[in-house]
Length: 102
Image (cartoon, rainbow, N blue to C red; front, top):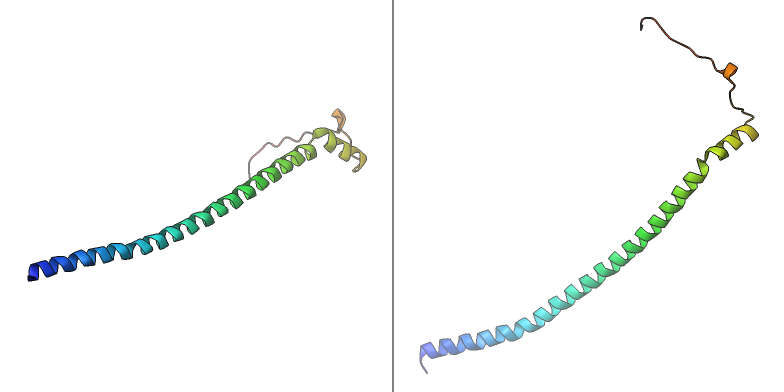
């Protein structure tokens, strides 16, 4: 057997061993990627649930704001609880400011 054929045989065996060794490495990398994907999918689902919850809470708060800022409700509280009344024309005092600014 010549030196060239020994070197060629060595590289063939080395290539086969390298290929055989790379298969488990590729399987390990695939497993790591699959786990990472599963974790990220779980996180996305949790964030979507949280988003839905926040949207519902926001809707509830907007509804409460519209109820609390209702003009009739505010007038009723002003009259019944605070003893206020609508101003009559003679109750309104207009102040005009003329002259120089100091």
